[in-house]
Length: 53
Image 1 (cartoon, rainbow, N blue to C red):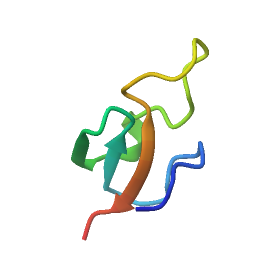
Image 2 (cartoon, rainbow, N blue to C red; image 1 turned 60 degrees about the vertical axis):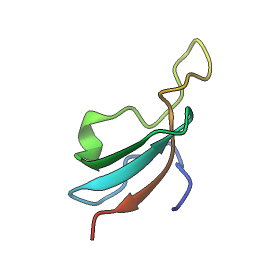
Image 3 (cartoon, rainbow, N blue to C red; image 1 turned 90 degrees about the vertical axis):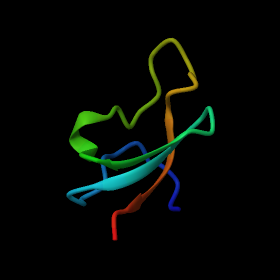
Image 4 (cartoon, helix red, strand yellow; image 1 turned 180 degrees about the vertical axis):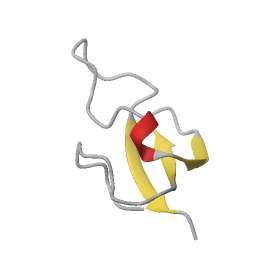
């Protein structure tokens, strides 16, 4: 999986891996936050993604 660069990927749907280890499949990248929260890192931060095949 490519690492999160802080910019939403240009794909229609992606699978994401969160900092807490969860994997969420087939999400619209426009509906997730791709940068860390101002308060700092959290378990729900996206750390990696891959396009849905």
